[in-house]
Amino acid sequence: MISAENVAAELRHILEHRQLSALFQPIVHLRRADVWGHEGLIRGPSDSPLHAPASLFRAAAMLGASEVLESLCVHTVVQSYAGAGGDPLLFLNLSPDFLLALGTERLIGEFIPMLPESMRHRMVLELTEQSRLTDFAELREYAMMLRREGLAIAMDDLGEGFSGLRLWSELRPDYVKIDKHFIQGINIDSVKQGFVRSVAQMAREAGCELIAEGIETEAEFLTVQSLGITLGQGYFFARPQPRPVRSLGIEVTQILRLASAASVHHSVNHAVRVERLATPVVPVGPNASAETAFARFEAEPKLISLPVVADGKPLGLISRYTMVDRFARLYRRELYGKKPCTFFVEPDSLVVEARTTLHELSDRLISTDIHHLANGFIIVEGERYVGVGSAHDLLREITQMQILAARYANPLTQLPGNVPIHERLSLLLEQGEPFAICYADLDYFKPFNDVYGFRRGDDLIQVTARLLAQVVEHGKDFLGHIGGDDFIMIFQSPDWEARCQRLMEAFSREVPALYDADDRLRGGIESEDRQGRQHFFPVASLSIGAVQVSPGGFADHHEVAAAASAAKREAKKTRGNSLFVERRSNPARAAAVRALPA
Image 1 (cartoon, helix red, strand yellow):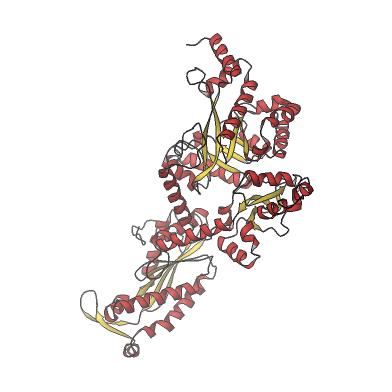
Image 2 (tube, helix red, strand yellow; image 1 turned 135 degrees about the vertical axis):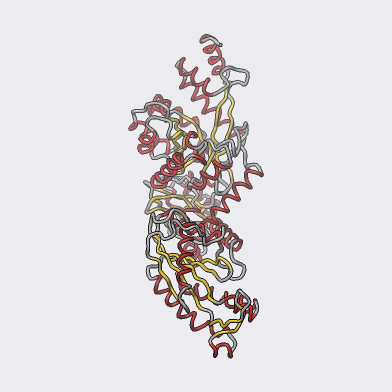
């Protein structure tokens, strides 16, 4: 065991000769399957007992050298990242004690100048909180100073420290990291899932991005993603490496893209919101100079528009094309460089509420000035800035939705099939939304198909689908095709019973026209029944079994489907077009039958 004297000597040698090295672990955008940023990590010499960061910082704390070590760590990570050409965000670990020990003068005069000005807008100071912090007011003041310099703030290890929620409330960080304890094994732990779900809700309300640390397995990743978290970090994606990575491995990328596609598909048949497009670009304040804004565009080639935000409220967008064009002219940089960046804000910047649907946004973009397609738009919740979006992102999402919708659609009617039906039901149950499910089934379809052939049978199915589509309200209700002559309508329209009545009336008017003239006069056709006996079958009719679903009334979509199936059987007991409404709270809780095939 190494003695305290040797530890002290080893630490002094490391600090004097700057024998620290940086490693970088990617932070991944789970939906886009790309690298969002890197956390800078530190290591001592590989052959030293102080190689591990825990040993290194423990030794520094014992010898009163924590401040010197942290300063050297920051310098080492920043220089290594700049030298490797790192483009995404860089997360720098700092302790609150370090910032408080600096004091205002040293913070402004020593620490901030240590960070290259050209990189500050890409830096996130990650405050690790594992001590009993009490001076929140001073730390909040320092955080405001750092933000004015273009730096973002992250809070590390939520759930590990003693004052995490208080620190979150006081600092209002741009990013919050969930401690890996709550992520590891989350796929099999409902308590951890509940905790992370609650934290995700708080993050949405606080307007910050959540990062799940310690994702080590595909199952953990899938669970984290299903809880609505967009950023993740862990060995599943990549281990810390000496150089920042620009892309993930092929296998991991494929898993992320498939999971993202499944997530889109989960939303294909209900309104997907604009919040899905939000990229939380670090904004500039209204007092920033035009030169500062121009430097952002020079440092970030992919940045199309730069948001200007004051006290959380967006003032507008600065367009790359407008600013670069103006600065490129003779003497314009000298003339305008010192002016406030608000001089370049587009006067009619497009601002979109996060809960707007993608299709509503698409309609709005089509009907507005064409420059919005190039500049993009600001996304807000209420009046609070959330992020920016682009027409390219919108087009990608809508295209993906259309592809996946086609994959799961019934080939004859192009209506959503079993998987989207199940997912729609599960979503409404999870959200606690009341709705009515109607199971519609054709009566006497088989004899019609036997007598007139499958081509005429397909015509009857398509006519039925068209009539059903006419009574569901786009954007509110849902229409699915289980298969054959079975359809599902999921109503959130309050007048759903009246809609079903209109449906049956339209069916009575249009379907007889599909029969031959003689059969119409007779009111039906002669055909064999299922036992091979000749029998007369009336003109096809529609039986609808309906169940009203209240929050908490059903455990899952299987129970809802079973209840709808039972109601449909009751409707079929009445000859002709019929609607049976099951008004009991859960008639099928004990039923063994399942209406929809898995």
